[in-house]
Amino acid sequence: MSSTPIIRLENVSKTYDSGVVQAVRNISLEIPKGEICSVMGPSGCGKSTLLNMIGALDRPTSGRILVKGRPLETIPPSRYRNRTVGFIFQLHHLLPSITLEENVALPLVARRNISRRQRLVMARRLLSEVGIANRASFYPVQVSGGERQRAAVARALVSQPEILLADEPTGGVDSRTAGLVMEAILRRCVSQGMTALIVTHNPEIAYQARRVIFMRDGRLIQDGKAVNCQASMV
View 1 (cartoon, one colour):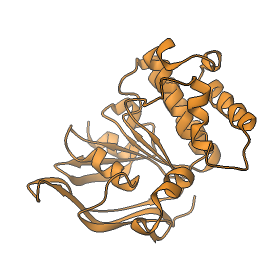
View 2 (cartoon, one colour):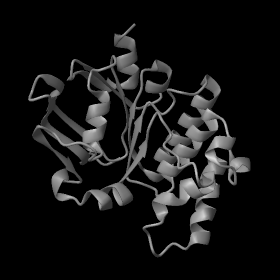
View 3 (cartoon, one colour):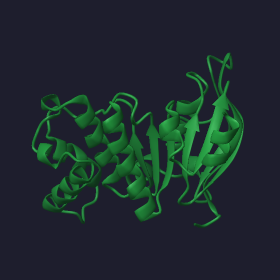
């Protein structure tokens, strides 16, 4: 794994309400390419805000974020989200009017060199990886919440992003489904050298990563290898 950071945060802060709410406070962080990293901390500590800024869904109030050495604000957001980063949210955000396989194929529509047939083949392959190939032609309303979340995972992975951002990807599913979701995420990350940041409240999920970051009150309070972090919390 390369030691060159694919993501670099330099004194990043984020405030709201004219500075009254300090969501993220002066965080500096480097994440090498291929790192699988979980982010833990109590509700409201800034985990999701941090992820949203790295994903260009929000902008820092101060400091800067670099991706592959380039300031994030100089990268066209549509290209960044289509080519570089994939998102998994706690709420699946599937479109109700199209099938699961069509939902999964959506990130590939902008790539004109990939035909509709190829897109659907790739989507079905991902649905098979997350264990719901038999639901490919179903609409979101016709499947369970856990199956919708697995489809959302497949959608995030189908474009083979360099960076995967997952915000509580197993928060709304049972333990068995959570295991399947994480298995699919980790398998893809390892096989493709993908960088992943996984926000979670669940220690069982967090310690599957190689590195764990703890946040509190908008600050980074601990950062290290998963095994060492787990031992320090006992």
